[in-house]
Every structure is written in C-alpha cells, then in structure tokens.
Image (cartoon, rainbow, N blue to C red; front, side, top):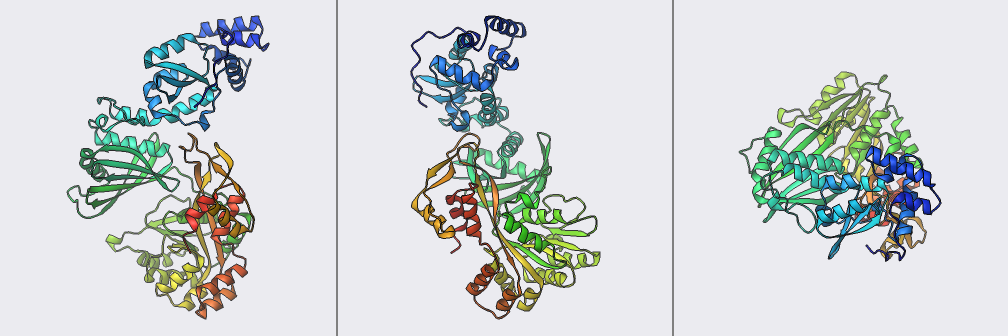
Length: 565
C-alpha cells in the first residue's frame, strides 16, 4: 500500500482546529466540541459526527487532504493478517483503528483521527514498531474490525491456555491449538462457518496435519490447519454428538445432531469415512431458521420464470428438476412447493433427509435401514389423498415407476434427478428402465439448472478478459466484447471477487412434437433441436445473459457449464 509523503506544513493540533482552518467550524463550535468530548470522555471525531457538524466521510477526506495522508477504502484493501495479529482486538476497538499492512520496520494502521497523538503514542508503545497512519471512516474501520478479528477471536477463546503463536499469514499455529478441547474446536468451527456463509465443513487428515476447509458459494476454501494428534479426539467427539459408533473406524457412517450457535438452531449432517491417513469428516450445515426462497428469488429470467410458472399450473403430471449435486435442485423444489396454495391442496413430501420445514405441508423422511424407501413410502402416500407430491429424488426404476403412476392418476409430482441437462433427464428416465410411453404421457416438463457465483458488489469493476472468455460469450450471444464486470477482490468477499450465488436455468416443456420424437427413439440432437424450436433457452445462453446483465462473469459460466460438451 503506497502512501504520499506527508505535507510540509505543520499539522493542526486537533480535528476541531483543522475544521476551523477549513472554514467548516467556528471557534465557538470547536470549543463546545472539545468540552463535550472531555465531559463525555468521547473522541472528538465522534462528537463532531454525532452533533451533525460534519459527516464521517467528509471528515476523513478533509483530514487526509490537510495532513497529506492517504484515505483508504478498507472494502477494497487487502488486510494483512500478520499486521492484525500485532494489535489486540480490544485496543483496535478502543481507539477505532485497524492494522492493514506490516512493513519492514513499521505498521500501516487505518485511523479516524491521526491528530490524536496520545492514541498514536500508546499504539506505538504496544506494538513496538512505528505506526504509519492512513485515514478511513469510522464505519469502515468498525465493520472490518469484525471481519479481521472474528477468526482470531474465536481461536483465542478456544485456546485460552495456549501460547498464541502465529504463522506469517496471521493464523494461529498448530502449537497454539494443542491444548484446545474438541468441544471448543467444534463450537469454533461451527460459529466461524456460519459467519462465513459456509454450507459444509471438511475435516481431512493429511500426512502432516489436519486440514479444515469451508465450502462457500460452492467452492472449497482452506481455513486452518490443526495438529494431526487432534484428529482422533475431534472425530470421536463428532461421532458421539451424531450418535455414531466411535469404535468403528473402517466403515463409513452417517449421522446428525442439532446445535445452538449464537442463538441459531443448526441441523448438522455428519458423514465420516476412513482414508489412508485416518478418518475424514464432512459436516453439512442446515440453518433451521433459514427461510426457503420464492420462485422470483432463484435467479430465473422473466421469460424462464413465466415458462416455469405455466408448468406448475398443470393439474397433474410430473415436473423433474435435474442437475448435479449442489446445483440447487432442492431449493427449486422447495420454492415450487411454497407457491402452491397449501390451504386448498394437500401437499405431501418424501425426502432424504427433510432439510427445511415447509408450513402447511406434510413432510416425511425415508429410512432405508428400516425398509422405508422412496418407492414403498410413495405407495402409502397415494392413500393419503394428496394433490401435490414432492419426491426428493428418483434414484432407481421402482421409484421412477411409482412416481410416474402417481402423475398418471391425477397428481402433480415434483421430483429431482441427476442429469446434465433437460434432454439428458428424459434419456436418464428411459435408462432407468421406465417404458418410453409412460415417460411421454406423464412428464409435463423438465428444469435443468446450475449455480454460478455472483460478482461482489463491493469490488466490481470492468476489466479486459482472456480471449477464451470473450469467444465463449460471443459464441452464445453473437456479441463481441473485450471488457466484462468482474470482482477485483475485497475483504467483504474474502478476496474472491464473488459473494453469493444465483441459478442458471433451462426449462423444457413436453410439447407434442418433443413427445413424438422421443417415442420415435430419435437421437439426442433431434430432441434438443425440437426443444430449442419450442422456445427453450439453453443453460449456456442463460448463463451468458447473466454475464451481459453484470450478474456473473464469463469465467464462472465456463467453469460451471462448458464441461458438458
């Protein structure tokens, strides 16, 4: 981070004096600010802002300009964890300062009031190196204190009796974690994962350490490394919490438990399996207070949404949502169910597992070990007078046939299937052993989908992209462009350039023309061409339309979708 040389003129003694020199404050107002600050034991910048004499942004801009310092936006800056480790969190909060960069013989610190010599001297004494101030708004500093210290604070709580040794990246080292109890580490991981919007926690043994990763927006990120000796007690504790057999270390096991984290009830699905380096664990986090999305929140364009709503309006038949694991199929099924008038319709769901509660719907869960499978439970559901049946997933011929029979007998069946695109889902049903005439007469439509990351709003900027991305965009939309919106990386998005995800969709309606070609056993290309002629927007095109709208990047669409061919 570069800084201009300090101005040659002498620096004003205080912020009120600086503002008087700028003509923004009278001497009487400056005296009153100092009096209130002394009486309330509050910093003068806080009094200036609270009294409405100057905005925090104007104050920062004027201070930086008059003192010859840089004014920084922490949202667009990289925070050096090594620098953060040098300043205790209570000191940072007390003075409203944030270390941002460790230099060879000094530390760059974002401050609100660089004229507070007492604070600057105290900070220098505590750190032991020279402090180079840069100016930021108080709101910016306080927001990023939360971001910068949250992991360090959690680890410090979990390792209160351990020496807080830190690596060059600012994370606590293995030696600082040896005395932490498994229960404390698990609590820390869950709290941190929820703060980071993680959907999964991966705990994996390597030859040298225990690797911890979070899946955020569909991508795995390294979070920390734990001592290898912490693996057995940590895995054992997780097994106990999930009701597993702690003595079994060779066979894979599944379980679940509910924990309360910072006032939120979280359902944790645990899977444990043995590897050559020891047992690994994956924790899937389901926030019980999560509110399922509506159809208009999934990311469907107006044309695609209207097409899908027409499908949901059919009185009977089967609607299939397809895509790979993690593509958002369950979210779409829940959103579709929420659209139903559940006061007039009997909505029954069969899931494995039941992830979220749907108000006024009758949700059931399969238990394969008890002989309660999708197929057997579906037969009993038909005797419960359902109008809408949600089948979590079709995995075999028996389930597919029973679901199709339910669709043929006057029910609307919503289900999911693993297939790459909408046409592939038709062929997948046939490959499961379902007669083509049953598929053609029961399936009303198919939705294929993927999830792409959304450009971070805090650091989005237009930049030139590689030729491969330009070509992929041009091939789909017939437009030539060199520059696209991308995220440059900031603290809000953890330097990834993305924050959150949205869906990419294609909706195939089973028209008479598609049915005829399918029954005639025509090749995949013929079915695809007919679906396009009937108005289907392919996944790739829908993805690139989101690129044109500045929602995602060409790279992200290529990463998710261009491996299909």
